[in-house]
Image (cartoon, rainbow, N blue to C red; front, side, top):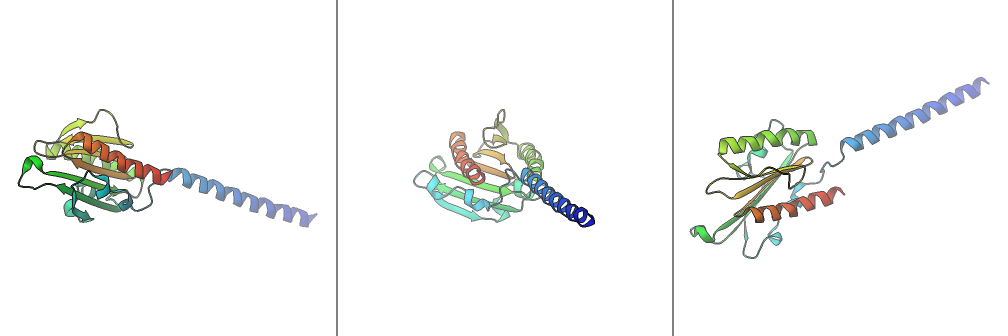
Length: 190
């Protein structure tokens, strides 16, 4: 009888341990749902995404060619990368176009949420940008279009733990290119 009680106790302990491990794994999966874990380089625009005639202007993780999203937040991104493209001659302002794409991956969704609003507000107030399209979230979990006289049309967005900033000469083009990046990110987590 004593052996049966010990045996049943051991089985109950093993079963309890197994179930508690499953619950812990489920909670971890819920907390990480939507986390982008792969390198953001895979989601950046490429020359193939652009209209004919563009060439690569820069490509890399140099903070000199990134925005405040990679420099300003208290919790810095764990990965940041940017690419720029140009078309035409810079001495001919009317025929010259620049397209930029920057992505910043944070270690958690919460870090990205905490970085997004204060940084975009900082860019607007300190950079004297005007809001183009901030009334609705057109890309990802939150987004805002901004511009300034003499500058490109920018669209900033947050998709889970990734913050992006794209720009071009027209807001329509910026939005279309942002949708390409958004689709790549969302496809990677589905």
